[in-house]
Structure formats: structure tokens, C-alpha cells
Length: 476
Ligand SMILES: Nc1ncnc2c1ncn2[C@@H]1O[C@H](COP(=O)(O)OP(=O)(O)OP(=O)(O)O)[C@@H](O)[C@H]1O
Image 1 (spheres, rainbow, N blue to C red):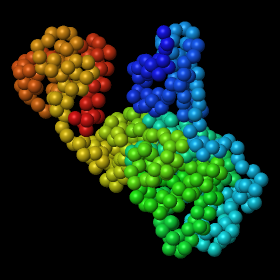
Image 2 (image 1 turned 90 degrees about the vertical axis):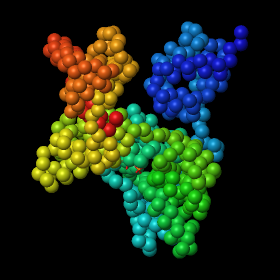
Image 3 (image 1 turned 120 degrees about the vertical axis):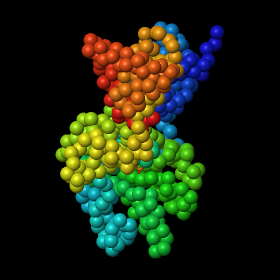
Image 4 (image 1 turned 180 degrees about the vertical axis):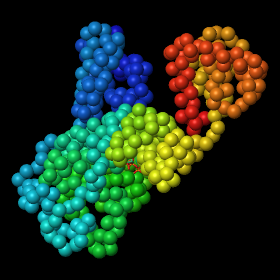
């Protein structure tokens, strides 16, 4: 029987999909192409070396297990590494030499000979000068908390900082929703490059500034100077490239600069609010170049990462806030780290201006300005939903007649929490549980109380659920 490599890999993917989170599956397994199968060895093609190393480091046991399942004990996996960034055929690792002596060497760290080139970042007319990298010194790797949401992008950034222009991540495109740390990460790479290689010229520029500089240079008839200036940069960071959309002339000049830098093994880092393929209004030739290196996305951070970010920020600011307040903030602000920090700053300001202690009540007032649904009341339905989820039973079962132990406990606990966390009468609570009367609610509450006194694990569950309900007000 002939076994087809594509079919084998397809089966492997089915197993892998069940064992890794969807996001990781998309990032690490979907881009893989099966290319051959010979003598029990399945060959897969991966986009670059980093990708291969990541798979080996994080998924080696899963891959081994999966391959054995498909190909038996002799089953092996072989990698073929595709260096996709080299589509123009040049070798990335080798730096050019001879006439291409790095210009800054003549002038010391960070100094470049401007010759007749006008530097759009400084007052014109000065010949030798240090280019201000325009980086924020606070945005470093140390202050950039790692989590599942940013691991790939962060690791790639660190690899670049150690070897700018010499990895296969050129360009590195960091993309993700608003306020998730794209700019911070890009600056972190720039700051680290400067620390490791003081002779390298790093420059951060927003797309908006870049566009304005181009407009100015066109007005002044100095486009060549502009392009020449950018060719002096070793690590160019362009933020929010989605703003280059539909700007034809800017794109044309950027294309030229990009090619020159890339051909000379200079590092390019771009950030965007969407993946390169989704950049509407961008020329195809630019999009295809953005795809040469690595596109790494930033996801919304999970609860632990949000807590770690907030705590790190507090410790930098030298403030202390009760744990239940930080939990409350992190439960409610989920999709934007800038907002998370904004809440903290407002909270500190409110507390000192009004001489009020920082507590959950004050946090509620502040968080309300950031999310729209915070001030909703807790409802019995919401309690039923969370408790049912916790016990893995259907919400309808809580309203039905089932006497299965798991359902009975969930039902009684929901009644108990409804009595304690809402201002509904016992009668009204009973009605939302399939028309039960108030004496059933009293009996349930008593049962839960008794159980909490005798069963510590159950008590923890109740406390945990109560906290979750109080904290997740905006999830209803
Ligand atoms: N992983 C992280 N650890 C610590 N702070 C972070 C992290 N991610 C983001 N931040 C902080 O969140 C704030 C917003 O981040 P940043 O400005 O980099 O987001 P962005 O994705 O570039 O946003 P935009 O899309 O609006 O340009 C910054 O203050 C940054 O320091």
C-alpha cells in the first residue's frame, strides 16, 4: 500500500489540533507543508529556522507521539527549512564588505556622516551628527511582560536584537489590535540593539511622520536626500504601517527604501493593526515584501498576564493597591493594555485628588469610564449561567426537576448566591428556578451553609464562584 505524505500529515494535524490551543495551531502547524515520505520518515517544510527550533523546543513530544501513531515505532520526522525572506536570492548572514564599510565607524557610536544628505529628524545644515533613534527608553524587554499572547513576537524580537539584519525575520511585522504592545515591543528591540551594538544606527518613525517627511521633501525638491538619509539606517522601525494605505507616492518611496535596506541586510521592523495580507490600499509588491520575514501577532493577554502587567506597572510607579482591586480591574479590562494602565493612573489620581482610599468601589467608578457594561446589576440568570458552567451542567437543568447530585448542588448553590448577591426576594428567586417556592430557596441556602462548614473544598468553590460573579460584572 502506498502511503501518501499529505494524508499522513493530515492525520497528524487532526491529533495535534486536539492537543494545542487554536491560536498555537494556526501559528505553528497550519503553515507547515508535508513534502515527502520515505522509509518511515515524513518530511515537512517549515518557513524558517526559528520556526523549526520553536517546534522542537515546544512540541517535540507531541510531534513524536503523533508521528509514531501514524507511522509506527520506526516513524521519524524530518524538516526542510524554507528561507522565505531570501526571495531576492541574497544571503542574509553575510554582511557586505569592502566598499560597504559601515558609515558610522568613522565617527564613533551612532554618528553618521550626513555629507550633503538632509536628515529629516534634525535641523538642516549640520553635517556630522548623531541620529536620535526616537526611542522611548522605558519600552524595553525588561518591562515587556511575557505571556502566551506575545511569546512568538517577543522571542523573534529578542533574536533580532542579538543579530539585527542577520536572522530570517526581516522584516519583522508585529501586528495586533489597538493597545496590545506593538509599539512597546518594537522599541524594545531598538533599545536592545543600541545597547548591544552602540555603533548601529537605529531609527523609529511613525507612518504618519514618515508620510509628512515625504510631503515636505517633495515640496522642497529633496526626495533623493530623504531616500539617501533612510539608507543610512541599520535598524528601521516603522510604526502603524496601515496608515500608508492609499498613499501612492509614500508607498513608492517606502518601497525603494525597503528594498535598499533589505538588500544591504539592514533590519526592518514594522507594526500594523492587521496582518500584511489584510492591508487594504497597499500595493501588492509591498505586501509581498512584508511577508518575506516573519509576521507575528499579538493577542489579548489572559488574566494572569494582565495581572502581571498591572503589578509590574504598580511596582514601577511605587504604588500599592489591594489585590481585590487589581483583580477587579483585570477581570473587567480585557482587550487593551493601554486601558489597563489608564485605569490604574486614573485610580491613583482619583484617590489622591479626592483623598479616598483605593478600593473596589472606587475602581468601579473608574472602570465605568473605560467599559460600558460595568454598572449592570448581578442577575439570577447570570449566576445560573456561571454556576452551570462551573459544574458542567445545562442551565435548563437548574430550572428542571432532575435529582442528579451534581445538578442538585449546582441548583442549591445558585439559589444561595442569588440570595446573597442580588436583592431579589426569596419568592422571585424561587420562580427563576422553574417556579419553586420560597421555602425551597431557604432550604437550599441552609444546605449550602452546612456543606461549607463541613467541606473545605466546597467552601473554596463557593468563595471562588462568588468572586468570579462579583468580578465579571461586564460579562453578562
Ligand atoms: N506585554 C506587556 N508588558 C508590559 N506592558 C505592556 C505590554 N504590552 C503592552 N504594554 C503597555 O501597554 C501600553 C500600550 O502599548 P503599545 O502602545 O505598545 O500598544 P500598540 O499595540 O502599539 O497600540 P496602537 O495600536 O494604539 O498603536 C504601553 O504603555 C505598553 O507599555
